[in-house]
Image (tube, rainbow, N blue to C red; front, side, top):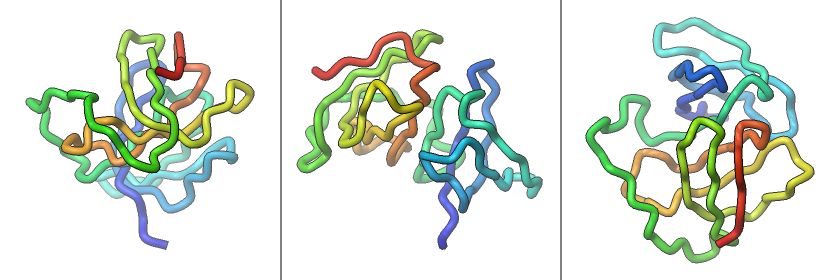
Length: 128
């Protein structure tokens, strides 16, 4: 399996970048090979989100605009994180009873391809 490029943000605000080949939404933990080559284990419940990215560096000057329509992307959803960040996207698998869910951001030009949101790191989740 081809590794996924990811940026991980913890609930404490730390950010780790690298690649993973064993992330599954129903598992409690996964491993990440950092950009420095270290292998680290992450527990899902300690994280805010797992950002599956086009490039680990991204463009820090890019301003996200969540206005794109994604045909076949599911229902449009707004996620308010406990740290104040807001992301709008589309989901096919949100359930309030699950620990997390995937969204495809409604900004196709941004660096994020998809995001696994950890529900316990959110303040509000609503369909729009």
